[in-house]
Amino acid sequence: MITRYGYDNFLALIAGGLTLITLGFWSEIAILKWLCAGLGGVVIFFACWFFRNPSRTIPQEALENDALVIAPADGKVVQIITLDEPRLIKGKAKRVSIFLSPLDVHVNRVPANGEIVFSDYVPGKFLVAMDHRASEENEQTVIGLRNSKGALLFKQMTGALARRIVNEAKAGERYAAGQEFGMMKFGSRMDVIVPESAEILVREGERVVGGETLLCRLLS
Image (cartoon, rainbow, N blue to C red):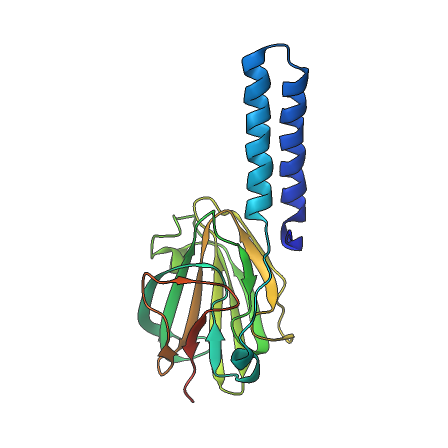
């Protein structure tokens, strides 16, 4: 299934791929015919692969327990650090950073049950998403969520390739863990920031699956 967040780009890429194939078909030069057909096929394959939205089985325990936080995106855990978070947690916090390559599913999911308390766009740079400075310096959306067990933040960040963030989460809306809310286009980074007391359930270097992998547990 193709994500609705990428219909515009998906259709544009499909049209571009079909145009290349058509140009190749009408060409009388053999090498150009196969080159255009091959490039067109690659473009169509990439569009279908990048904007795919496979179904996910949300852990029932995460849907029933506000303390459980799941991965908001597919990718690799590249950093787990302690930092100060002054806006919502207002104190020491832990940040789990997930890097998404262009090959990963880029649909984003809300990591826990709760109400969105703010959802803000922050302009910034376009550093490579693997660069840990990206968490503070890159263009991003910062989303705060609160539930019966506490509060957490999650961030969508652009990278050197990703230049567009889609975010439908709005303040005052309630979400269930694993519910889709947007995507980042063409390689990016996603952070989840929880209170320092939270139990982290993943390790650096581990691959996580958005909507399925348990990321941490809030300890009230």
